[in-house]
Image 1 (cartoon, helix red, strand yellow):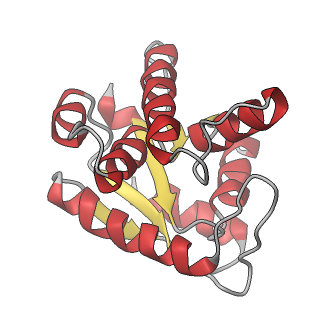
Image 2 (cartoon, helix red, strand yellow):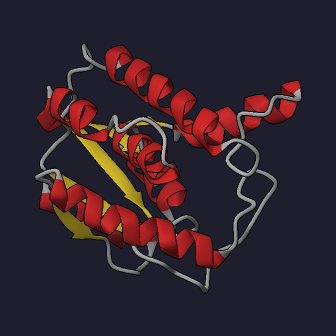
Length: 175
């Protein structure tokens, strides 16, 4: 199962969503980023589990959602591309000083050994109502993930900055 589960992570505003939409267009299953879904729900309900208000609560919700996403996709027969997911959420909680959950979760819930990271791309970075952090915070997160994934035994593949169709070809060619 874990070989079919592909993580696309990296810098906020680095083109992950656009790349994932291209992979979906090509017929692959895509799981939306837990964080963005949580932010949308919290903003709609007036909740406070938001990364700019309560990062630990936000990360705990993202972990729970990522685990549920994995369970929901277990029976899917083909490749499944995850927009961020469990490791990103657990890494955020660990970095925030919350419970040290990353090693145990990472060991129990493996993904494909190759993890694709979209690098910082300042030319296309844009904040929006759901992404309120600045580029400096996005860069710090990227650097943390760039260290976290290899430390957990993953091979990090940086996705080159190129048109989206070429990026999708690059990812699929490396699997």
